[in-house]
Structure formats: C-alpha cells, structure tokens
Length: 241
Image (tube, rainbow, N blue to C red; front, side, top):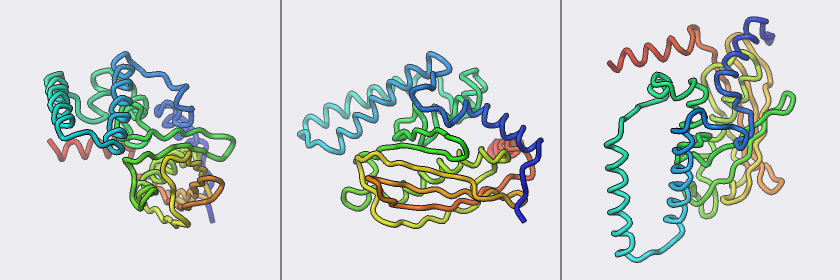
C-alpha cells in the first residue's frame, strides 16, 4: 500500500524546495543572487545565440579561423580569472544557496549554463508544468530532438516534480515511451504529477507535447536516500580528495 508523507517528510520537502529557490517559478521571475550571476547569465545567452548561429550558418573558413582566434583569447581571459568548480564551490564563496546556484548552473534549467536550453518550470495545484524550445544544437533525427535530450528533459523535470510529494530523492529509473518524433524549434509543453509513494520510492509520471500531440511519456522512480543528500555529497567529495 502507498505511504502518505508524514508531517516531518512534508516539512523536509518544503525546506529543500525553498533551498532550491522554488524551481517552479517562471524563469523571468527569478532574479540572480549576485551581480556575478547577472553578468554570467548575459554571457551564457550570448554563447547560446552564438552556437545556434554556428550550427545554422556557413561562414568562410577564413571567417571561422578569425572567430576561433578571438574565442581562444576570450577563453584565456576566463581561465586566468579565479576558478570555481561545482555547485559546492560557488556556495562556499557566497555566490548563493545551493538552490540559487542550481538555477544558474543546472544543465537543463541553468540561466548561466550555456548548454541549457533553458527549461522553464512552474506548478499549478498538484501538477508541474514546463516549457522549452530545443534548437538545432539538440538535433538527432532530421528536424527532431535527439532522444537522449528528451530523456534528459524528463530527468530534470520529473526530478523537480517529485518535490511536491514532500520527500524527494534521487533518480532510480526512467522508463520512456517515444510516441513520435519531438520537433525542434517548437515550444514543447511538459506536465508531470506524482502517482504514488511506496516507502522510500516516489513514482512520477510525465509527458511532452508538441503542437497538441504527445511525443513522449515517462515514468520515473525516485528513491529517497537513507542519509541526507549533504552527507552523500560530502562522502563523494572525500573520495575525490
């Protein structure tokens, strides 16, 4: 029989949700925690635009060679600035809470991560929603999103949706049914909801729709660890040192 979240589970879930800076706020309502992130967001968006243009243009070899040189110069400038590695590194130097940092560097929703589309998420009642447009950088089959990126979208989005259950965990399994090709350059609408919980497991379902048609469905099982996430994180860091 499914277990209902206890009061302490719900409180813990709310605290974790708050630490994530409410992942369900629309992207345009999330303000950067520091001036550093504000500037990095602008640079990340420029890089997104640049890479999208690179994927869809045919400059001459000479033009690309010149661009390569000034990009290499810019990379040297970045590498000569103080380096920070990983989310923990940013929190330790006071660039925001773990949740605030996640909204900047997350690989799918991060404002300041140039590989993020980014994914916009919000919640209404007991259902989570998301919207994203995947450009030419994510092409798999001609004109369609690569199936691996479809899976990544589900992992990120369902991982956020499970917070509504009050006792979030880590991805155990994702079972995806690809109903039809997911098109590029079209607003993709995602929705997700919690089906049930069984002990430490939370079962979440979701789907992607494009132009009114379901292109993929997913069931994710998320498992609450036996120890706090912070303890797991510290153990991993200890193994690396």
